[in-house]
Image 1 (cartoon, rainbow, N blue to C red):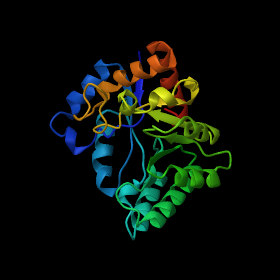
Image 2: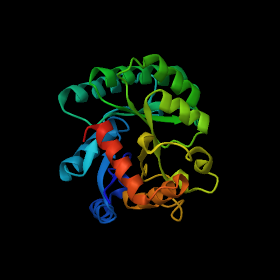
Image 3: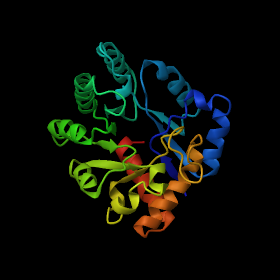
Image 4: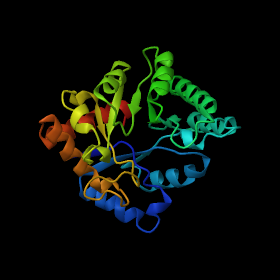
Length: 255
């Protein structure tokens, strides 16, 4: 089976001691494609260095994470826009809204997301969305920007069936990761009945490791654990889920 990890921070400092070994473990586990979201200006060099080291496996995005949005965020988005004009990227991202830690910068986060939604349309790229305790606010901005050309994925999706229907109705994919393996992760209520054409698989490594590695550093080699959980919940074979989600990722990111 060929798997695509549609969201992995493999360039993270947490992989400093064994990055290439982690990449080999991923390939041994059948994960042949890894799409890497950017965080902010500080992560660009490491991300692009890994892409250059493994150009047939690792593909970079370009964007500004909502937790890196501060007052004066515009300068960082100028850099994002300059990179998008300079060379190809798999997507704009990760972008979005995060109200878990701090609600005082909601207006700035909303403006940064609006700009990145427009950049995705301008460059004909998908946008990868991070939303934490801000689903309704994120959906409102995406719906306002949706003119029929906007596409992308709500990454690390663990919402309700009704929220999943909203995402699909906007023409977006659902990124399913390690939370699907958690006992109270909600995937058992949300996933059944959803067509494979709407799904991507991801790890979001080094975060959110699936069971039985929950609480440890996550890595792309653990993606088969997510695959088997999704297959079981959908009543599908792992091979069918692997084939469909890999096809979906290739089409969305034009890999």
